[in-house]
Image (cartoon, rainbow, N blue to C red; front, side, top):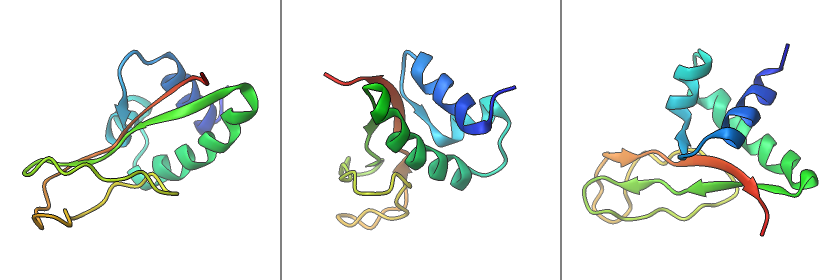
Length: 99
């Protein structure tokens, strides 16, 4: 039996397209996205030792297409600093070998 983080790692490692936290929640039947974001932060540190990295497609504004910068945490922003819209497209994640 795999732990939740091991399941998320396996899922992101085998995915062909980036997955959002919401999609991960639905696939693995996890109730809160915040748990997935915390786990991805931890997984990003763990996979470095295996020669891999978590690739993050940053969140973006659905209205003006502003792309948010990826900072220390991978959590989704709530409001666009450029147009103040709350239509935010969530960040998505993959695990790939480091280049």
